[in-house]
Length: 291
Image 1 (cartoon, rainbow, N blue to C red):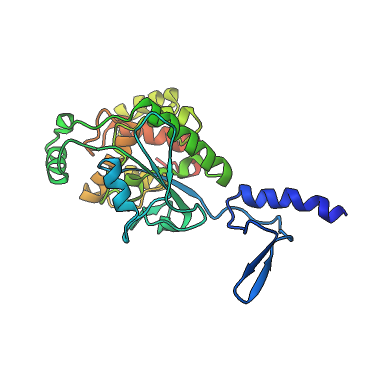
Image 2 (image 1 turned 90 degrees about the vertical axis):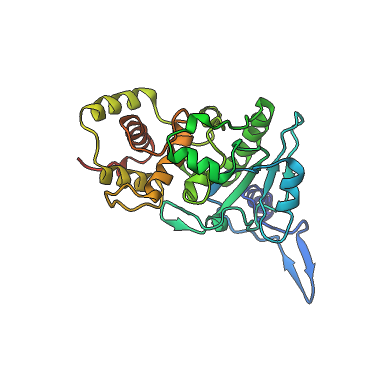
């Protein structure tokens, strides 16, 4: 009897962790029966990352693309006021949303992530025009579609639920641009990452720490190699070469779009370094580069 009393909590634990268990204790399959009545407590979710995207188009276009043969996402979040979310792929299945990706040394984040596509039109420029304006330091000439408050409220509810069920760390809530900076810019600088952080979703630096590090770096800025090493310690796939190449600029742009959306030209400066060091200090102190 004691074992039967323990069965229900263990079964509930399995479901809460997002396992793909059958709906009945005995599941009949072709040629055999699966018994779900014995559940091991020593397990956890395979999901480690939550990746946020924008659709770069309207709802109909997004659903047509994401239910097609080449790409998919676990969830699509419409713009409408109703808290309605499309689930296109079960969380226990591998959706094709991240593509070639890397974060904290891990590649192929499709295997360990849940993807949320937020319906949003993105920038008012083509990709080529966007790149041209960024290269010419004309980021302020780009207009980005806003994310309505009601849509963000729904995103918060959905993300909180996913994070709680899978135990996702704050630093593993990432933008598509974070994990694929040379290919992607979504969800762009208009997404209110600080508001998400205040709801328990993702990291954000302490303002006092940013001010302290900025005062230090305005007197003595870190070398580009140290900045690259710090970006790699935060999670980006980047080598500390000491050279300002396109990869480094793409990583800086992704970082700035998220943590300093007012200026995301992709150039190193004291404020960017201060934000990065403050984040490392708060969440990954072992990654702080030595002087």
